[in-house]
Length: 257
Image 1 (cartoon, rainbow, N blue to C red):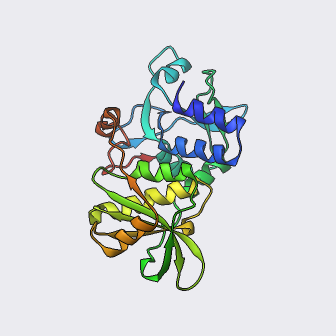
Image 2: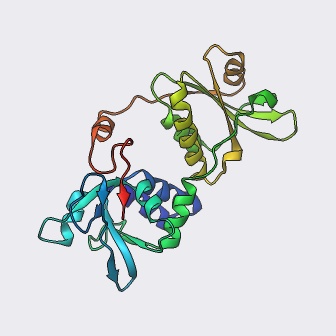
């Protein structure tokens, strides 16, 4: 059973929160997309299938599942789900996930759903409003979202989360991040935005503050709220990062025809 199997089953048995969790898992998953022919460098042509359910691309979340569609070798590209969604957006094509495998996650994702996922992955980033904070308090954020934010923290990063009352009125939450280099701030802002979106909240629900560990603001947020500790990466994560197949090198994004 794969991560997508479990997420799809939870969505089937659950509600909106479980549905959002499935879409986030799909965006993060490495999918094996069936191609018309072997990729040439970073240029690849997905195979479009005309099925009774409509025109779609086929993708699988495991190589052994991909192998079930033919006795002969099948040309494919290993791509993150977010890359496939971005390239499919607006084309009106569905995505068949694990079709013919009998997997729990076997399903057809309509073109409208793929468009929605692509939009979720391109939302505006949260704002930085630390200068407007009037008062801080312990956070009242869903624990699942707190765990998701904690999982985003790179090793060596310090983070503190608290409720914030703003001088202009209203309450929200603020996440202070310390120990990040300038090149990592944009990436973290994007990751936090996605975590918020897939939790059912929008970017306005959380403000970011990039500060030094010794900054007074960080100390205030840590004292009033809670400190988040980065989780040490598992060894299996390193093997995924090292993969250099089509679409896996951020410096060479794939181009789908």
